[in-house]
Image 1 (cartoon, rainbow, N blue to C red):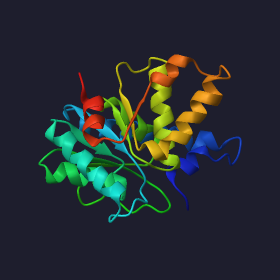
Image 2 (tube, rainbow, N blue to C red; image 1 turned 60 degrees about the horizontal axis):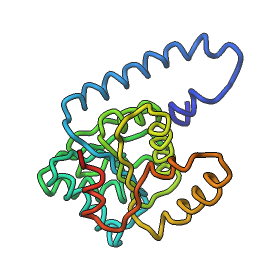
Image 3 (cartoon, one colour; image 1 turned 30 degrees about the horizontal axis):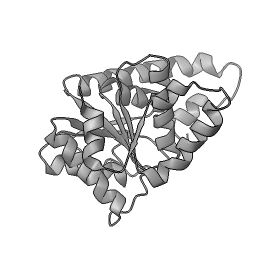
Image 4 (cartoon, helix red, strand yellow; image 1 turned 90 degrees about the horizontal axis):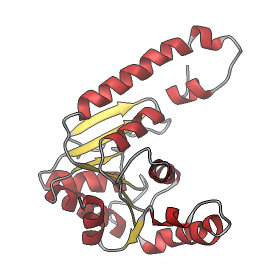
Length: 221
């Protein structure tokens, strides 16, 4: 059957399909949780780094991701990414080159390219929600580089978890003032200003252009 496991789970094909297919998918989902927990249970302190898979290797953003991965490793933190190319590869590469632990949590996609070569511990997932659990459960914070819809998805999930206190003391750092300022302004001037979120929600993340500051913010005790 074409497509991905997530697509097959979420597509509605008929009123009785769940009887024949979904119970077996529950076992598959369970096995993914078990595999992820087993692979990461003894990881130690870690930070999840997000960013675009489309970041070119010869770009300043890639070099920043590499520096961030290196800095996190030197601070004693494992680096967790989605395991793909671009900014994810850069962070994994920086961590690996510095002798740190480099983790990649891949996902089955129609355009999947596999885990990048700098991943030391790699787990591939079929279901986004299982993978997203691992990003949060085994990290002490998020460091978010410029990225697209997948990066925004992870960012807003983390913000919601902190806002609702599903996770505690979970620093979220956005790197790149020019890239993120439009989003931050919209959250402040529209979402918060219209009462759709509280003023305190605007304090759930920090924005910086300084690599050392970003690392300090996301790793501070």
